[in-house]
Image 1: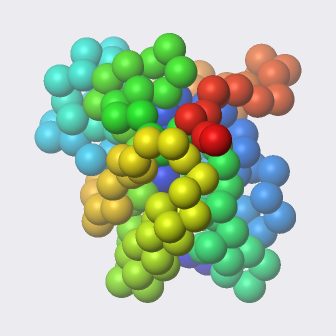
Image 2: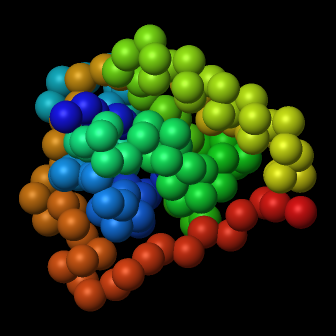
Amino acid sequence: MEKATFAAGCFWGVESAFREINGVVSTRVGYTGGNIENPTYEIVCTDKSGHAEAVEVEYDPKKVSFEKLLNVFWESHDPTTLNKQGPDIGTQYRSAIFYHTPAQQATALDSLEQLRLSKKFKTPIVTQVVPAETFYPAEEYHQRYLEKQGIKHCNIKRNED
């Protein structure tokens, strides 16, 4: 099994999208990329901890490729809005790929460049590609939140042509 970590705004909808993919063994939402240990949702929401709301995906690379996970990531949010997704504003809602291996880094950078060259978006892509850091699982009530609420998806308006 391998891990991939993505930040794409509110983690509830992103987690739901990854859970639908064959080959994804598990997901968990949480916080990464910040400057304090063991952050809570309340601290992350102050926009002062530096953490992003993120989804850690455990997957079987024999059943699903990292490239496929990247495609789900790109389709799950608007990668052109800096520190904002829909009504959510703050650095905790930034777009980022937290790579775990040099191969993930290279694949993520290539995917990002291909998306830029495609001119799919009207404005520049602001997604960060950065090394994975400590991942702190979010509180239990955030895990599989949409599923618990009986909701399928969060819809974010995308800045596409």
